[in-house]
Image (cartoon, rainbow, N blue to C red; front, side, top):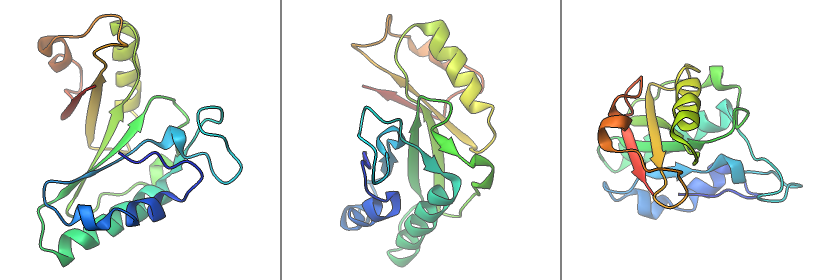
Length: 158
């Protein structure tokens, strides 16, 4: 789970290539911390572009191909509407399953509303949902999470 800070997202993924050679290791990106060269993490809302996501997908697909690995997950955590810029440019890449994860905590209704909004944006086939065991107002049970539409393909418990 990479928190990019002032670095370049692709460069940060390149730094973990030796771990990505393991078939059980995948990559997640917290773009809210990708603040660019002048930003301050936590103070400056971070972003990631569709082009940057495509470059990461291409790079990870190359690792999968080179080392004959099963497909890799790339998880992009998203809790703010403007976190992903140019999402319409994001494309599907062979050997990569791109998951956009609704990464907010709070009340069930608010979380469900955000999930519905993010999953309707259309730039990802796969959707994830985060459950925060300490920060959520009430921890959703499995049945509640599985009733979300579309049903999340990945569920994180944190």
